[in-house]
Amino acid sequence: MDKVDPTLFILQFFVNDFVNNHLEWESKSLVKHQYLRRPFASIRSDEPRHQSGVLAWLYRSRIGDSRILNRIDGLVQNAQSRWQGDPLESLPIALRERYEAESIAVTRRLLVKLRAYYSRIPAVMVNCVGEEVGPNRSWTTLARESGFVPIEAPSIALLEAKARGDQDIFHADGAHLSDDGNQLHGSVLTEELASLKTDPGAALERPR
Image (tube, rainbow, N blue to C red; front, side, top):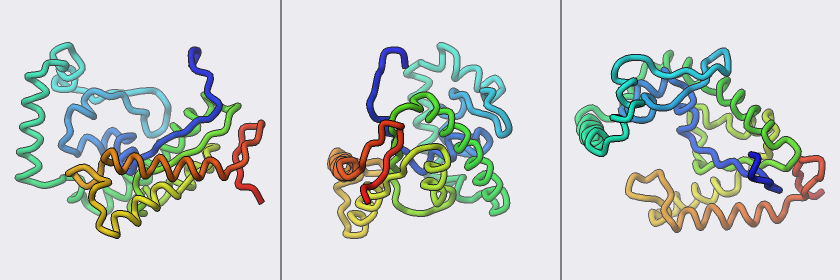
């Protein structure tokens, strides 16, 4: 922050950020190198916490940076994915609903903190997923509550391209954007930003 003096704060959001912000929810996934390494905000406070246990310690140690360990981790993850699918999809409905509600609360708190870092400049938030699934239905509301202006057009453009069968905008996993997808998302965002009026008081609004 001391070295960067931006004139605009753009936060790119993705649907899995809700899962990534919730330690217990993310720990149900197959991607061990994510939740075993990263710190998480707790449900009720901003105090960072890590997953406990010997395996978590191993992944956060210098051994965790080993190419061999990460290669083994990838092979195990791929095998588990083929055998059992995505465990997040098979969670009980009541547990999923609790995780979603808690992740929305944590995400709101983190967004408020992020916005405060550059509170004196305009800030916008975009999403790479247009589908209103799970907690992603709340992203525009969370953006506004946190002081960001949500810009929906880029994610809508991706959704429309997907509906047309334009698979070139995605990588093989059908989710992450390809170079073409990033080009589409960025060009639509640029057009939207050009249509917004910048307020020196750090707000953005559409011209009346």
